[in-house]
Length: 108
Image (tube, rainbow, N blue to C red; front, side, top):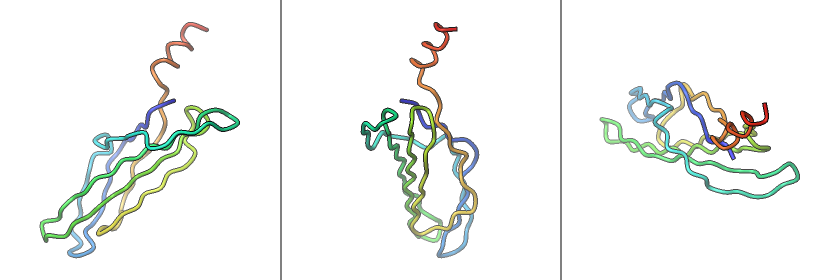
């Protein structure tokens, strides 16, 4: 199973006052939310959730879900936002696990 690799800046604005906020995509914390066996191997769902507050007092919440299937392949992503409007998303990918990278080095 790989890991989620997120790059760039996430940019969003508050739906109450329109103030623009940014967050470094590398700061997103990803957790394995679900894993199940399928015909081409394991399907893994990773989840990153967080909340942010605007200066106007509005609360914004985010839930980013990505799916890896088959191994080391990004198979889909979904971002659910409440209290904000997305202006720019992250560049999301799946990076190989250290174990898999070391196995490739042994084979070549």
